[in-house]
Amino acid sequence: MDEAFFRATYERYWSRLYSICYFTIGSREAAEDTVTEVFISLWNNRDRQVIENMDHYLVRAAKNLSLKYLIRQQKMDAALLRMVDTLQDHHRHSQPERPLEVKEIRAVAHRTLESLPEKTRAIYLMNREDGLTYQQIAEKTGLSVKSVEYHVSKALRALSQSLLVVLLELSCHHSGTI
Image (tube, rainbow, N blue to C red; front, side):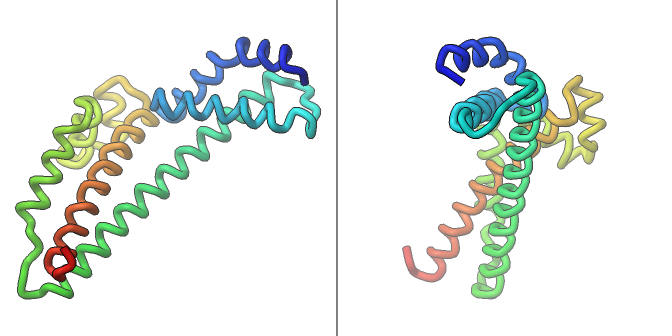
């Protein structure tokens, strides 16, 4: 594959692959990154493989990389939540005479939710406070279930990161390391 053929392939397929990735992932930035990853892989492997059906190859690569992205995000979300739980448990056991500063943690959670884009915040609240399933939220908002999953995941990631920071600060403060 020469440069001219690669450029023509890129121009022909970029929009289609972006649509596939965006539909699967629900994030413009992540979809763009995923399409870029597809084309980087295509270029880097140009001398190692013979592609008989470029359309099929690129669509399959875009779908596979989109799914891998979602799996990585879910694993990161789960790991962050486990870290927050571990820190909370550690704090409860190491500081039994001092209850966890619930007020401060709630304030951080509130500020984090307020900082989220309106759509992400609304979808998260529909799920967590109203108890709606992803399917119910999708029907109510006109979004795909994948988009709802993306927004809830985005909110959980932001909350986990914010809460992890405050719990680390509280843990260090109480242990005297700050």
